[in-house]
Length: 375
Image (cartoon, rainbow, N blue to C red):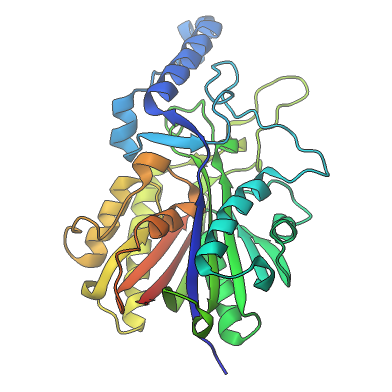
């Protein structure tokens, strides 16, 4: 016997601290001035390239981002540091990701109207984990009082949708009845804040989703009609170091590829058609036409990318509300972005309305989830 999986609750944890574009530009430009002064001789000799200033206009035009939430702004905005100052936790303290996940998870569990002890599966799906082991998901499982089992999953910006597919498949097969997918993203910890081309991209956040058998839902739900995932290796988006910046013992700066890197033009050129075709193939396989979709909840990486994908999928310019963006407020929050959009822009759905969550990013990876509303 197979069961229909459904999303019955969502939750979003938003950090208290905000960095506006104006604050970020002031900090970055101060860093650039310090760098140029320190390397004045090499710059004069043509051996080193001077750091150019950033601007609010440049950031908005390049991304559509106006601000971002972060776990620590003091370290990021310090021109002599330019990365978050996150306190090292003792082994008997909750990890940072677990604290974030607990907040989002409690909101999702409350919305679903269940008790945490009923959850049989916890997946922590995020672009970077705070540690290699034990799995952060197992810590979250214990912290919220869930049963069953838990594991971590990393597919970069597609982690949430890949996590949704894994949880949905287990519910469909009868392995579990209730699951929680959490996406604690501390993107500020692996962003290169000293690079003008990307210093504005990321923010921090955590999302959570409760999945259950549709027949067990206590209120309104989104049935998961189908999911589809795909990967294709590319090195155009990468991080060769891991979660947080590490300095060499001799104080020499890290290699540039130790933090977030991307070849933006190649990514746009290669990912946009891949995602558009993926979505169209996915819904066609279920006999759904683009005109039947009430909304696209897309990965929140870049407004121009989302606008292009929306036009390609719908065959026209998306109407207001058909493809909501949360980039202007949250920036790119990796795997959590599409889930924030879904959580904030799904309450107006009526019985039978269709929508699609889609995320995409490093890998390349793309994951999509086709949903139908039931009241």
